[in-house]
Image (tube, rainbow, N blue to C red; front, top):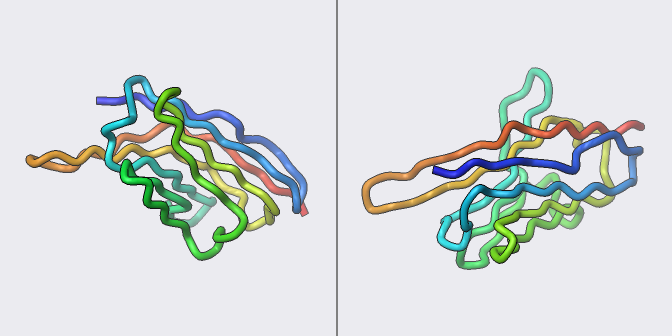
Length: 119
């Protein structure tokens, strides 16, 4: 089990930046993947970025070159640096932890943080 708490959302103008933080209730060192998803009104939740314990990162095409995900295992925290924000980035952003074991894969979610980008 792990609880995730996001912070850092808010209102920003197009072209601006925000940094989201997700702090876990336990060490994330052994957690297979930590990621950020987002869900805009009327749309499905989609992967934004993910970082594995092996330092592999994965980004949605729509955010490549603008967003950067990073893990700070010492602080049990995952960050999402978002630059050159666009109105279409407006959504609720959710932190995700994917824990993989021999028996199964478990996913845990934070409560979400709102990001609004004005034009």
